[in-house]
Image (tube, rainbow, N blue to C red; front, side, top):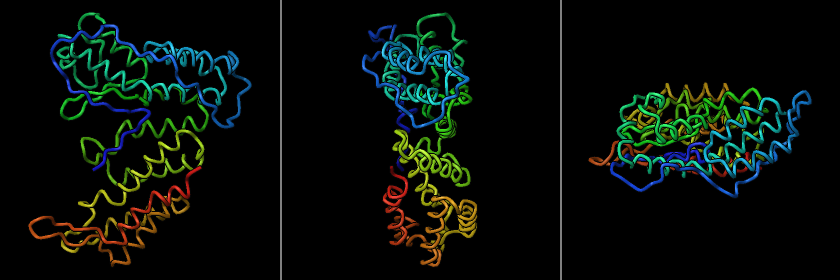
Length: 337
């Protein structure tokens, strides 16, 4: 099964601990002399009662800071100081610029982390901690400990897979502290990211949430795509939406099919019907309704029987395969700019 990776907040580079010694510098930093400037985000109204500094000045300062910053915590400190005092349009621009910084530099941060772990004693220190990791509990006050603290102050969180491979990702739960200062797009974007990173729908090669949990996520992302279809973030969230939708309709097969008849279980049919009715005004609700119509053409049979000795479930019914394969084109026609 394909594992969806959010490119901007979780360019998740799993890092298996490597013991031994390297010549990596203890002062590993992220530097990039040519960051992209904060974008112009739509027409969110400025709040005239706010404004510590002119918006253009703040954006220019942030661009320069992003080019020179050694760690992301320098950028979050800037937002902590200025975001609540500016208008919502500028706040969104600054927040999205921070998100661009994460997207660009997270792979380097993870590479730096791998190099630090290779230095004698560092991996052992980290293994001694319990999740969630409190780096203040590390003994001593060396550069490794300070580097870890800098990452958390910069809005990142250390995660681990089941095989204890570690990676840094954006901690959108922590970044919710900025929500009150953001415009509508910023708030909606932040909500989607916090939901997905807080409890990913896929993890360690398998589904991590129920179909009932996934349904509202689809609708939330659809609303973003409809409301901000020209946003630079729409392309990335459209990929997430398509993955959500295909998963919702097809990837719970072992919990959805009566293997004796290859039919969709009545309880699952009812769940789809309830979803389509609840969200009938949405594009997602209509897609689920149309899928049920295709299933009904087969008298609820979804798969052909498998081959004896090879598999229980065989190929998907042709009309259903055609329906699922056509989702990306259908979505492109209705949600693209």
